[in-house]
Image 1 (cartoon, rainbow, N blue to C red):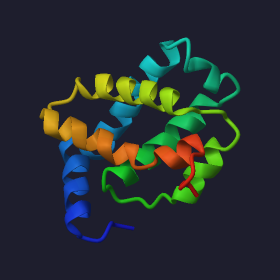
Image 2: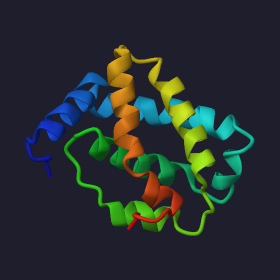
Image 3: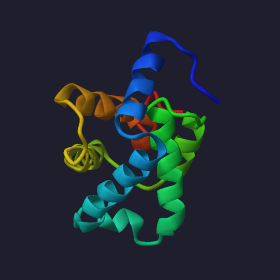
Amino acid sequence: MENALTPDARISRQLYEGIGGSLGVAALVERFYEGVLRDPQLAPFFKHTTMDRLRNMQIEFFTAALGGPVEFGTDAIAHAHQGRGITLPDFQRFVRHLFDALSGFDLSDDERYGVVQRISTYVNEITGAPGGT
């Protein structure tokens, strides 16, 4: 399902297209997790995770967050992260790795920050903070 063409959705869709569509999102997820899995503070979160499944889920998540042609509910995000003990500082480390991964794309700084901003809207669902689903 395509996102409605609200101003926010149009900006998101521009981010999706600017990163290279589905191939760009797949490359971003790969680069992102290379950094995350090398991080000794973040790698333990994935100790018992099937990486192929995680990559596929992350491709769907990033596609939806960036306005691509897929729907991904915040309930699914909250459920996937429930009980994992992800804190705000952990999330911030993830975001730093995301920004590093984005540096390999032909995006402006504003576009990179736009991607990070779109992903950061899910911080409460990921950390289990009040306000998350």
